[in-house]
Image (cartoon, rainbow, N blue to C red; front, side):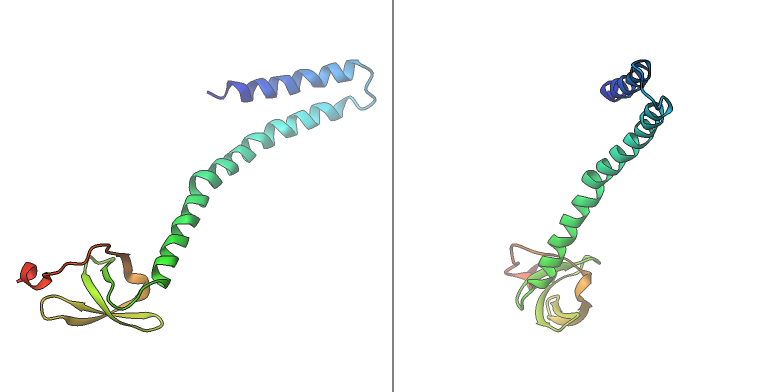
Length: 130
């Protein structure tokens, strides 16, 4: 799978003696740079893979959640991280008041505890829960 990487390392290792044989004044430096490149190249590749596989998608997800939380409005039907469904009745800075159940019981939640905003609102919520 990574044969091309080994080919690069072999080419660098073979190029160092050829440069030394050509009358290079500093014969030890090409070997040292080739060894340094062979040591650093896998580390750089690991960092690049981690960035594109872990860090970048997590940043996108965090941005999407932050936008969702900042766009909350009264009347939105939401689900909390605890699995409670309700309708937003009022919004404060860090708190959201939900109307929950058939009797529209008010419950106060932290804004960060909201998992998602439901796209479809339930019309006859009281009949379903009763």
